[in-house]
Image (cartoon, rainbow, N blue to C red; front, side, top):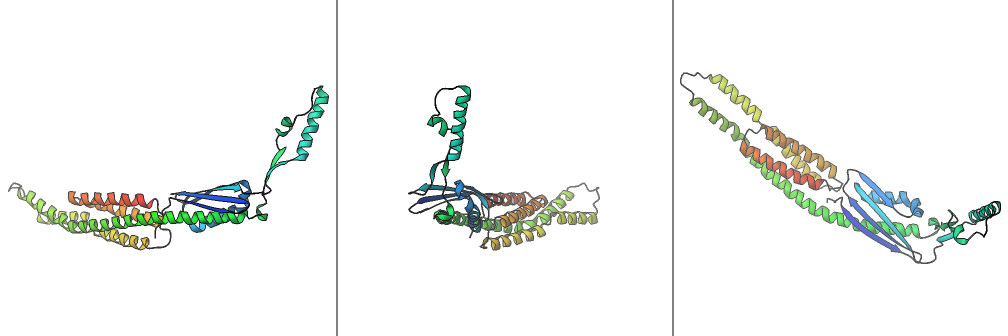
Length: 292
């Protein structure tokens, strides 16, 4: 079953101390690009987060957002950095004496200095935060995969339908192709018949021209390869592995064969069918760009 590269998932986990919410957004991308936006104290979990995501999502631009709220006394909060505060206080009083200034150091001045007030962070290894974060992440991944699978199922139905259209068009080309040389031969004979009687025509040269034209218009190899690529695409679509890149390559090859058929056609009806084939291939290509 196909998976879309576009999706959204949200998960949450709570305890007496924390409430963790995780949101994951994915869009199409040639490779796997994971971006994690989380509080600094979750940095020790980054490798675990990436492994969990990579095991589920093989390709795409993946943005992961962590939001953490305190539910009770977690030990986190503002903290006085006493050595730094003492140093600033000593410095300010020294400046007052040396410059003959009046007044004492205010609280507002002291707490405004850098690193006097710091934030006491939680020790993630000694709390349940790591477990909650991974639990919320897994819930978000599950919701994301469900959405990607639903979109992928709809995309697969559309792609299968369009490949069916291509098979019908291929049959039309196969029916039309043999008649191109025959019609050209008839038209050539009609033109020769209209020549004046005193103009000589070399039958051997005419036979050679017909043979050259037939060889130039022969698209039997292109038809065989096109049909083979269609068979391959059906097999790939049934795979349980990510198939986006494989399908992109197959569509490129189908388009290559269609271009060659168009350049060899020398027939307006055949050219029109090839144009329709290329239009259908472009619609398939647009869908495949969003397949994992």
